[in-house]
Length: 301
Image 1 (cartoon, rainbow, N blue to C red):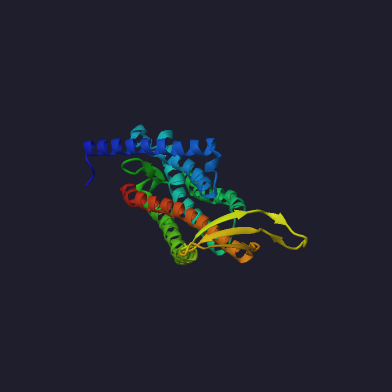
Image 2: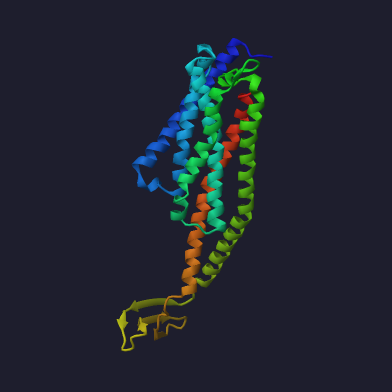
């Protein structure tokens, strides 16, 4: 049963309001990235690139039913359908790109510079791949089915007579990408959990080693060099007050830095950074799932 005019008007109004809010939020992301160098991190750069696709898709949804009212063969309707077919799947592809970065970070030990060198490939993949069918549809037309781009009830998109293309070129690939992205996160989830447990265990061991003693200690440190060129001492005069009130003086030699401990600290910092990156990427993926669970049903007749 087709919706009434009042229902279509309510849908169109809601669609435009939500699109306007999305455009405003996306503009904040773009401006923040351009104006502040603090935002120019690997995950933020991918979000920045994905934001341009969101802007173009929101422009298409802002047009709403105006494309249909202008005529199915009108430039407005054809342009709206082209934007829908090109930029809506790009969101799913960008989530896959972010998941690939998570995989490369945890399993291939990629650093930020290596990830940055992949960005032009992500741009080509996420925007170039959906562009091919979106542009090709302009030139497909038959007597039985008519043009590919036509009315999709609430906006211009792939016409109902070509609905098999919706499954083959839109719904199918998008859901495949979503499941592939989920599989990558599921694979890395176990590794992330193990890393977090190791960090917590290391933190608990460190806190046990730092338990205070019952004596009060005052240290006066003087850094000096000794005659041996291979050894540096830090004489430390320690004044301890025990329960009996006796005072003892002793000199302690400071040990050189522990390379193993330094490596553990660096590994912990790297894991924390990777975990922070993963959280942002997963949030983007969850937002995509929530959006598409409602949107994929609405674009079909």
